[in-house]
Amino acid sequence: MELRNYMELVADEALGRMLVDREDVCKCEHCRKDALALVLNRLPAKYIVTDKGRIMTKIKETEVQFQADIIRELVKALEIIKKSPRHNLNV
Ligand SMILES: [Zn+2]
Image (cartoon, rainbow, N blue to C red; front, side, top):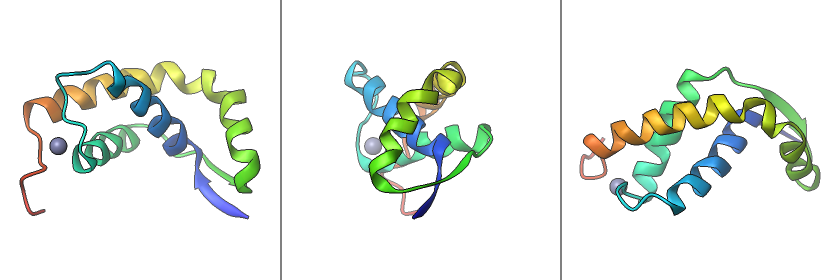
């Protein structure tokens, strides 16, 4: 069994979908993780205990509940990344 932050899983999936349509934002791993960190610092963590097989089903079931909040925070995060990407900094 695994302890996972459910919010992280949903936000990561939503970020992936959003970046498909965004030609203006860098998609490197550093920028993706920065965007995810910004979003997750603003949203409450939702920990769940799960096995790997069931986790995707769970996401589909309750995704809608948090989707609006996550999308709103993702849009803000991408604006921040776009203005000042940190991928060239050794931090
Ligand atoms: Zn980048």
